[in-house]
Length: 613
Image 1: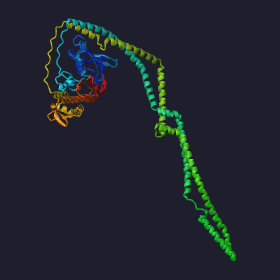
Image 2 (image 1 turned 45 degrees about the vertical axis):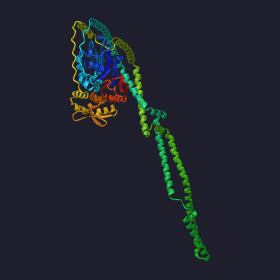
Image 3 (image 1 turned 90 degrees about the vertical axis):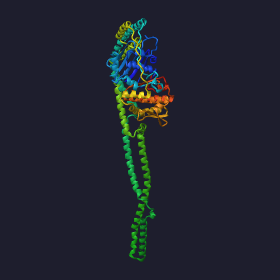
Image 4 (image 1 turned 30 degrees about the vertical axis):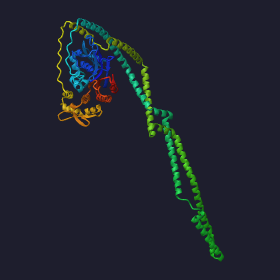
């Protein structure tokens, strides 16, 4: 269960300037007095015929002054309820009907209302609320016995009979309220009709809302691809650029392949080594020597007149062979000289091929770098997504333009504007007539009849105040009451709370008290400077810290078990500022999954709150 709104009129310590306190899930700080806020919520959520006499009034001397309050809540059945109570007249419980978009009456009987709230709405019992979900300054061990948020309840005395003047004044007020209620009822009927018209107009415009949502999603997708869009706009036809890149890559690969083949040829030539000089070539020198020897033998034979002279004829082929070897050597020298030039030509060709490829693909490579992509494949994918996003965006724009061009759309929009203006006027009229509280005229008429009859009823007997319960040690009493609600023993409950309570104790004491423990007899011990000490022997301030730590652990455990509402008042007022800020963080953490209402004006708690009323 979660509270959404509290309204009060004539209740001292609760009624805000605006008449209402708006609430949210989590940790809420409200500018109210804790005891008065708890008493008001108990009177609303656990209604009793005598609640009007126990509420603190803003004008206590005027018993006939109206005291009214209301609360809006979401029950565990996921239904929104609104309870409105005039403590001098009656009480009404309504539930919100999502089909009619209005509140429908559930009951006007106090017993039925209380049973419905505790049953389907999931309201905890009054005893469970007091034992597990309330943290009040009056419960502190140092203030035990003082009146406050956790003081023992007494049965209030019965209201005294009104004088004839008071009865007549009350009747006049009821007649005036009846007239206002009838006017408010007419205004409410008008609002219901306007809301029905507004619903139909919104239904007619709902298709446009869906189209706008689709257009917004398409614009969001385009916005996410804004960088790709800028790059694609600069490149122009990206697909053509990608095709050109593929061709440029093929040309580069072909050119580099030719360069590699040329280098392989040059490497083969270079592998043969540099030839010797012609005059050092052994074959040339051998041919020259053989030619000279044959010439010498021929001369000797000619001198002797022998046939050896014919050997001189062999000089011609031997010297020719030597000349041929010499020419081969010269050719190899020239080939080496040409290889150097070819090497430079090959290097120049390779440079030109690479530079041409760089020029042809510079823009694409820059685009890939700007987008932080690993390669062109990813760029192509993003360009495809961009094209799809552009097509989707254009489609949604066309659908929106077609929808807005329909006459039915213009009529529905004009009807919605007219109805909203009339609704604002009707709400203003209803607020001026009802003042935030709308009671059924039939209920007021019945109250008029009862008020007329009460004037003739003899005075009621004074109720006897219930005797006070015997005093119980606050820490033991806390554990006993909580254990009774949870069907546990006090020792078992204390042991289950030790871990969280020890953390809260250390945080609130500034690590002076490092934790809590329980001995075999169930005695609560506090760890002060590393030594356990019985809680009964601690100073009052430290006993208050033990109490607060246990209470915070109980509240967090109960809220964590299911959505629940806890009430806290100025129980931390006596702590230093650092401890109060730590307490605010603990309350905010405990409120997760439920709701805590903290009645305080301390800025340390308002700063940490999820919502400050």
